[in-house]
Length: 338
Image (tube, rainbow, N blue to C red; front, side):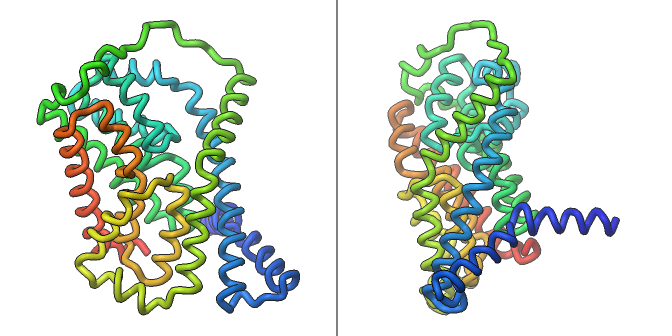
């Protein structure tokens, strides 16, 4: 048992957290740049270089592996799987399928149109729409690399639960009439699934890595830059005064600030890391991450093109209330996960 714990501890510190990289960057900053990492400027540069390299390494490796697995589950196969399931079972499967698709909220909209047009219940497609940008397999390891495994797993679990409950409520409300009529005419043509060769799967995975990195690199750098500023330049007492765990408005404020932003979870992680290190409640940080990824303004604008305002408002209210409940719960119970 002790051997397993030692192996797991080594994997977590050296592969996920990359302590070796942190030490190398510290040598670079202190010996080459001549700056102390214990001071603001040196600490900021160390945070920016270390977090950027670590996130990009993990992101590329994880997306390649996940995309290779995903090549066995193209949209047509996912549609067939979801089409055979009804009720809560369909919502659960829709949410779980969303976790294996590395799409941001805007990229999920075309799949939402395809699934709905193919006749799937809108509640099931909304479960997919919520979970796809909110939770993916890569986020588990990335969260574990920054926080710990308990927080990573808890985030994924509550994200899936939110997707299932949100989709179930939309199903119960029978809101099909609030989907734009053209969506129902966008059904997919039945065709035999193409069997890919191993080389084609590898090429698909490489292209997914290129596409996703091209789409998120700027947000990662922005997120790491903001995280470096928060971590090294903004005094902890100021952050605690505004977003401290004892402030009842911290969670709603985090959601309100997060919605206008647009980024993948990879871009929000460095900000989340810096905020937690400054004493911000775990629930507040997770609420911010969820609002940015699931309710970003650009994705809501795109969604408005395919659903009517009433359904859009209901969707935003359901997800917002769910995020608020999760945030408050983690702020009071999250200390057990740290």
